[in-house]
Image (cartoon, rainbow, N blue to C red; front, side, top):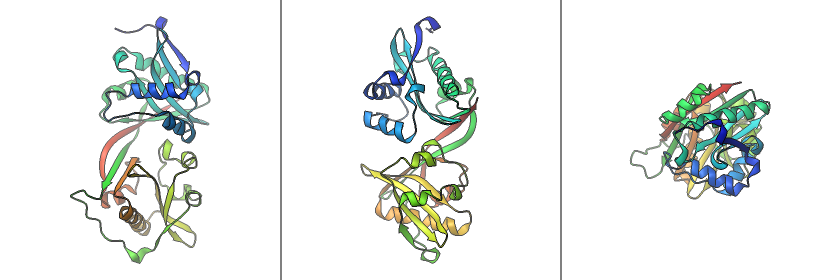
Length: 288
């Protein structure tokens, strides 16, 4: 069964409270590749950190019943789809294509000239939906994980010859963000998002002119997430970054890093430090 335009409509996310939107978001990710339960507090944090524009987040309705949602962040001419989905009972009926078209229309109406999103590589139905809407592959993204108790973990010791690892204030390190990134991070790890996160901690390897390498992270519920990894180009900064990761591993037994660009020249340092790939996504982009 498919739906015609007569019984399909849209309302902006701002028409609903965050409790409702968080529950709908969770429903649209039912039967996903991994558990996804979104709380009201988490959605509120995403809205603040990732600049979600609830007026531009379409809620899909069939016969006036909300059955789908797309959450969209907008920063000037750039936009980003944080989450996208249709509830299980209404999948396979062409509704995702309608939702995707409305999502793009609203972002363009708001002045955006491009939109990016991430999708698990083997989620072929979602990839097909986005490609039909005009999205094209930009790059691949890797989620990585490290456990202190993994059988194959064997990190080399810190290399004291290349410099000292110190704690540093995240806001001071972010002042050097542009100089230390060879490739642009994804939306929620880009500078505007990082500036909105209050719980960050930082480690850095410093020189007289500032940090040569740094890592920003946040810890919660027994897991520490790396949210920014940066270094100047060259062999020495790579060694410094390896030291930073090993220092982090000394104090945090479970580390994760989501959506690291596969073309990031710092990725080999993470792999050499014992991190293993867990999920591979595609970053897709549409230019309006």
